[in-house]
Length: 219
Image (tube, rainbow, N blue to C red; front, side, top):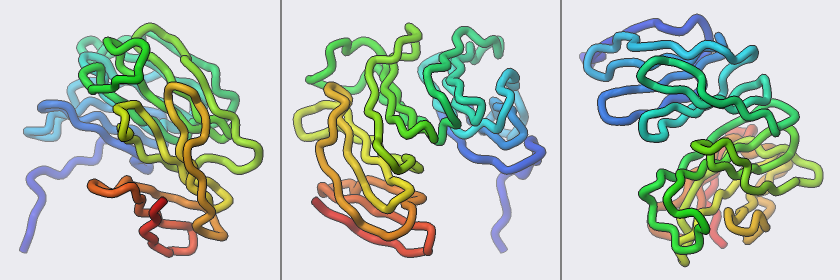
């Protein structure tokens, strides 16, 4: 019989996302909290409180944590003392997810290579790119109708950053960081794309939709 290395109940509601860095885990929940958890023993090392709606995602960025929420805000936290250092509120509706490219990534197209870049998708129908360490929204892509529900980040053939989002009307759309323009678009389902992952070796994506269908989609 298999057993957990540790088992804890730190959140009071649904856990939406987590990220790992070294010996720390960050978790976010419908209960509006972000927790820093010690991977060795499962104990909470700190809690970030400030979001007024469910927290939908979080990513480590060196010694800080970046979180996004249903309150439409992105918040940057000092991981050492659990203090909020920035709050960015450019989104106009719930933020559904966040992806991060660390500052060490090789990205020949990037104009500011020393800064980490993140991407957020929201119910306001935008895909936004940020440099969170300086509190800057770099650029965004405005969708015309559908809502972006999920995304898969990648570094493209030329070394630039891009995301492929799954939409509420069953499309996948690849958006380039440097230009915020669509590089690829394909209708793959009649219902919303709920999860997406980039194929590790090919220009292809695995998707799962709200009808329970899994697909491998190529360009």
